[in-house]
Image 1 (cartoon, helix red, strand yellow):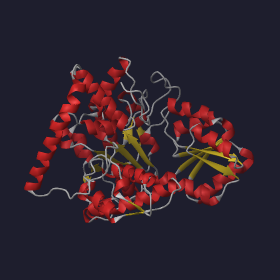
Image 2 (spheres, rainbow, N blue to C red):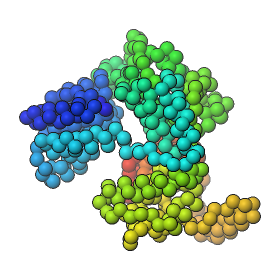
Image 3 (cartoon, rainbow, N blue to C red):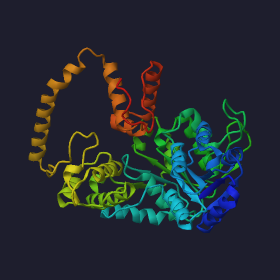
Image 4 (cartoon, rainbow, N blue to C red):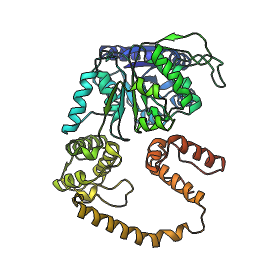
Length: 467
């Protein structure tokens, strides 16, 4: 854990710093925001604790302008609720009153270190994957983690890091699908001052941040082919060139990559370099979908129910037996992420002493989880298809008139925007649901923006007016 403390507060932040170091954090200190930004550019950080007097709402835009995604914990003397609320509204994740409480500081550090992703499993198929992960973790081999979206690939990557010889060093993750192509090279390798418009100062990249530790390249299949060549060289030579510099920099890192796509197919289609694929795929860890892990559904559901009862300060209810049947019968196309959201909703909607199936809504709120046993035989499958066809035929009479008069492009636009709203602006999740690449989705959204169509941004709720 790399902690950047910003401000003075008459020595109280110094006490917080000492507590954090006692808990294993590596602490650096900055007197003001400009110094803090300079340290972020050259050393990076996993968490910032900021004196509330430094105007946190003004700091957030400066971090975003340079694409820093470091969570901020506000600190202030006293426990004034109004002050705490203003800090959180300004962009802080939490407010810590000073003088600091050792247990509170420890809890904050633990929460950030875990990144709200608990590794919970019980199913035999998952135990086999974990056993392989533990076996290869101490090595220096590159690892490719594959699986559907939402299965827990990043959690697996963190597990490998924690079991490796680099566990006491940095774990740095970069989402290759979430960063625009023209910025990803700088994000990975860093840049020199003046290397391009907006490069106001030298900044180290994720490779240098992870030096000595582990670098996670999340959704690497979405990386542009031209950048893949530079990445291959960096992995092979263990050295990088900052954008705008000709001086190579040696790095000592372990690479873990994830993908929700079949990279072998991407290689055949010319969308991914075969030499990079072989370099990354020294060991492959395939995380199975949740529908193939029924025992995990049960333990994860119970875990999330308890977690969100505590988060929302509501009664901790057990899942009823009927609810467990409904949960294990559902296919969970969104995997663990979908299950987590479903359990969060159920905690808020549940009444009585247990969580009943009535409280477990489908993601689009169209109804509840089915209590019926999934069809397994050919006869049942045929019956299911027949029922589905009948339902589609009935729905066609309702939905087709709403489409008449629209062009194919307009229907496609409405589908993409509605799916993006459903995913709260998450481009990767929306692209997976739509069955298109993240690059295709970005191109569509850029066109809609040019046409003046409001496009949901990451984190947006469904409050925007329909297109």
